[in-house]
Length: 225
Image 1 (tube, rainbow, N blue to C red):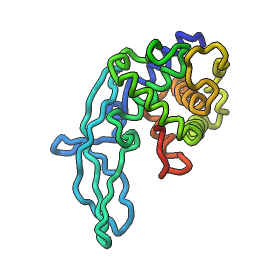
Image 2 (cartoon, helix red, strand yellow):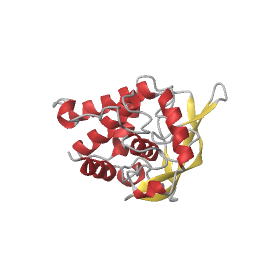
Image 3 (tube, rainbow, N blue to C red):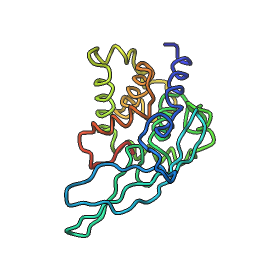
Image 4 (cartoon, one colour):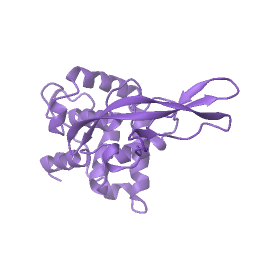
């Protein structure tokens, strides 16, 4: 696949967040989008909800949605917890699709953070380059787990055909890639599988990200960043 065509394909499958392509956030009778999640155990009961605002993408443009997350109360200990949506990253105001697309736009380019062309025009508006730089540093901490989860998701979606049927070609060698900060790393490999697999399978990146998170070996560790 020619390089510009390849990037166009990656951008196309990254145009929609989960709110636009799944029923992950069904609307209640009062109009709220509520993520119920799963009850932690028999001793836990519903204890209201609380709001979470997330920036996401719809048709490649910015959309800010408000998601209400289910809170749970332990009847025995009084402890509380909540169900976190699979594209909600702790302490980040952007959904996981935006984070992954911003990181891959940088990693897959031959230019530096301040000079590369994002996969989608909307990513030129936000997040800031400093924010993306912080995300990259955090993503490297979980790179091995992230890459493994992403490869598993692509492999399971591609069965019974081998993953290589959908994820063809490979990455450019590290030499001569300028300020590319991640050539040859597990993070680079994992995001390559995510975007190449999404384009080949003709499915939204946001959906494959959710499936990858569900297949993460150790779910209590950080995800993506």
